[in-house]
Length: 71
Image (cartoon, rainbow, N blue to C red; front, side, top):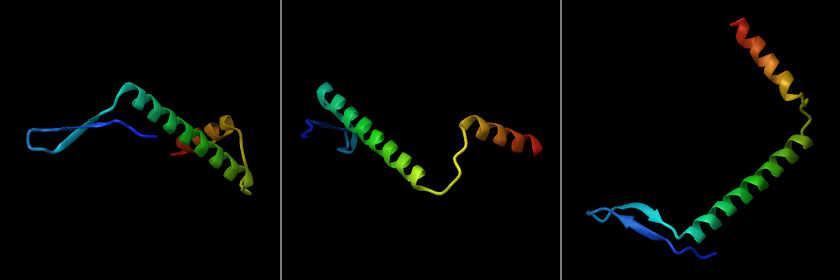
C-alpha cells in the first residue's frame, strides 16, 4: 500500500506531524485492526497450547479481590 502523507514542519524545519488523506487514514486503521486481530489469535493459540490452568474471569477477579482485602 502506498500512503500519500504530507509531513508538517515548524518554522525551523523540524517535523511536527503528518497529514494523511482520509482514505489513507482509514486504510491504516484497518491494517492496525487486522494486526490486532491476528495478535489476539496468536495469543489465544499460545494459551491453549500451554499447560497452565485456565480459570473463569469471574473467579480470577474474586481471587484478586480476596488478596487485596488481605492486605
